[in-house]
Image (cartoon, rainbow, N blue to C red; front, side, top):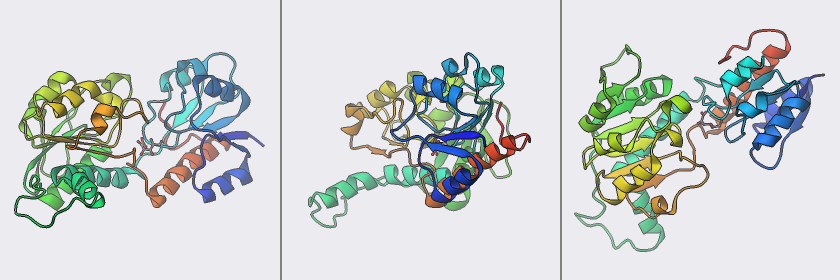
Length: 315
Ligand code: 8YV
């Protein structure tokens, strides 16, 4: 039996199937450090890792027992997939099954931030609501406004569809390569131009080195003062200190964030701001989606164990 390490407790039916097919170990105690990841590469035939586990280049040096990483998550910026490939290690991910759940969180952040839902909820819970008033809790209208999608991949398109078909919004987008979509949307070739032209920016690009700080201080400075910034991608895509500066000084109106540069650390300055909604990386967090992600990650490992090419292979 091949030795499989699953680095976090995922859905029970997936764990049960894994236990029936492999000599299974479930890692307890949080994300794998770089040293633990490197050791696991020596000790197991396959690993099912997830966000936070440190599979950077150092994990792929030397003589490795592990030849398969079936990542739980579509984003795999915590794995150096090129170093893995060079070491003969296959990496797979879990696209598609989390697209809708993640796009829904994007819409929720647009709505919550624009309509000041976090502030309102805090006020009610604190017993500070003094009743209806014509000017209490006034937010920004969403329906009919313009959204700018940064990265028109699967999740970007799912957010754009919701904005267009559900909220009658005008959709602009930035994407590195030219992209055709089957609903009304205009591609803008310059990111700063896009950010300056819209009411809402939603970031949906992959993490990793090539998009690090793609949303720079200068890109944020291009936004209009009433603009709202939403990030459901990876924190590292945005210059977080510059974002906090922009929120603090009113250069932009608000932010809805599901991801942070150094998760789970969320800067005190950000937590102190009323004009942002802060979620704990809930993008794919539905029971149904997390089970489907676990199943897809395991199915890729099973395919590999049976000598097939894993269907969601990324390297
Ligand atoms: C995952 C995500 O839950 O899949 C991704 O890339 O961002 C999340 O929805 C998380 O990364 C676990 O791998």
